[in-house]
Amino acid sequence: MAPPLFVSDTLPANGATAPAADLTVVAIAFSEAIDDSSLKDGVSLAAVASYTDTGAGTDIPLSLSSVSEDRLSALFAIGGPLMAGQYYRISVRKDAVKSGSGNTMVADVHHYFLAQ
Image (cartoon, rainbow, N blue to C red; front, side, top):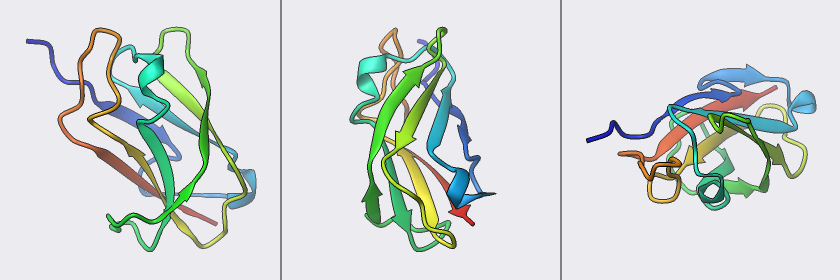
């Protein structure tokens, strides 16, 4: 059995502080080549109250901007300015995102950052 797909990194990194004015994209790296078509509904960005907030939050529009040639990473354009002093959560849904070979993740992934 193949190992499950996992998120190997995000930009901004989990727990990072990022300059709100300069942040127009988020990037996600995966453990294996991703099925591009699974990314549209499987990745989201939300404004949340803290680094540990698991509630719904306020959705921030994201659109898939590009996928690397090796399909190991994807870049998403943020659909509006982020507010300084606000926490944000990048979420990758286990039931939506899959690898090119059909592998899925075992759990949803949530990475948080603070815009400054």
